[in-house]
Amino acid sequence: MSEWWTYRLEDFLLFSPRVYWRMFELANAACWPLHLLTLAAGLAMVLLVLLQPRRHGLWIAFVLAALFAFVGWSFLWSRYAAINWAIAYVAPAFGLQALLLAFGGARGGLAFDRRDLAARLGLLIAVVGLVVYPLLPPLFGRPWASAEVFGIAPDPTAIATLGVMLAASGGLVPLLLAIPLLWLLLSGLTLHAMGDPQAWLPLLAAATTVAALALRRIAR
Image (tube, helix red, strand yellow):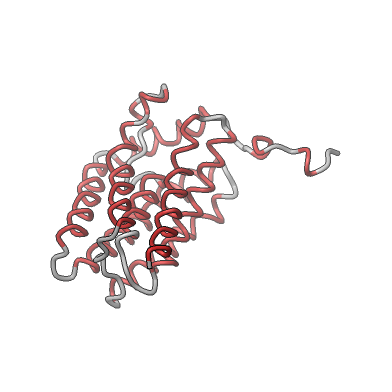
């Protein structure tokens, strides 16, 4: 029996890259044309951050809560957990994120009113999750059917959420950042274990968010 330190990250991988990306194809086929609604909701969310109409925090929180609950159930629990048993323990975190968002929105504890450098960088991160991620498949030699779309797949949903949360203020914000950050770390490590060149993207999004928060703290 090999010692634990001789194992590599890929030794813990329970599926092949083909199975992994096929999972996205099946999810997209099952959910279409819901993608149009989730993308519209994401773009509306960014507009709400920019324009700040009355009760904008409530609507943003509820949109994100609904999408986290949906992704946690329809993708993580119903599909990903079937090829990776560990995801059955991760999916409830998306449900917890949804509850925290709904609680923060209902209690009026979230306001997306920051306009500093970190907030502007956050909106750029959100655009990456909303617009850039669905366009990635051809760049990495995959079919369009495997596209990762905000509100359908977990990575762009987590990335766009981090971006929007960089513009948020309120006591719940640190908690609302934690689960998307941890997910992107897990996703990046999984892609790295598969030898997928896309692995750097979720890790970069998480690192950029942490750097933006550090810059904000330094600037105080």
